[in-house]
Amino acid sequence: MMLQPIYVLDLETTGLVGEPVDKAVEIGIARVDLERGRVYPEYSRIINQDLTPAQQESWVFEHTDLTPLDVSNSPHSQFRVAMELSLFYPNCYFTSYNRVFDFGKFVDHWNVPLRYAPCIKVLCADEWNNGEWFKAQEAYDLLCPDNPAGLKDGIEAHRALSDAVMEGYILCRAFDASESIREQYAEVLEV
Image (cartoon, rainbow, N blue to C red):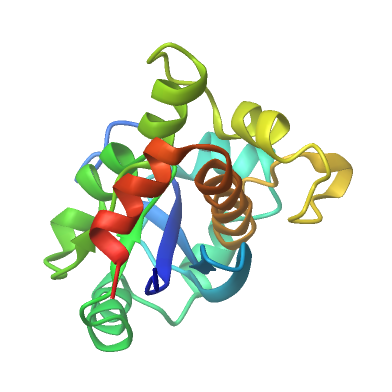
């Protein structure tokens, strides 16, 4: 079986509601080679947004090294990021650890024609947690105890590219560990 690469996307946002209430302030994409179990950091942008005072006090700014000033100084508008996704990733398959959130609440509103593969979070929950969702950090701890992403102290950084790489390794390990997950991704990615 030969599989095309899959792209794992992660966003950092000002909240959990989605657009237009919340803004995506950072995007990261990792390219995943499931056949070789390798993850490659590929794309990272801080997204310029006009943030409200409440958005400037969001969790992401209080718990990471990303600042509202980084966002307001970024040369990358959401429109530009959407155009880059369309140009750089035509006919590619995307997923994320929480596809309903990253795509459903944000990226799908950007009018980018993307193709989707199964959600990592849903498949991991079905395989290892009786259908109950668990956080990316918990999935990483379970499937990646050797810390292949090289996270400081093995802890999620909550920065988009670092998290996309971490989630890419979750996907690789899930793919290796579960025949059901292998079949679901092969159905989409087989060349």
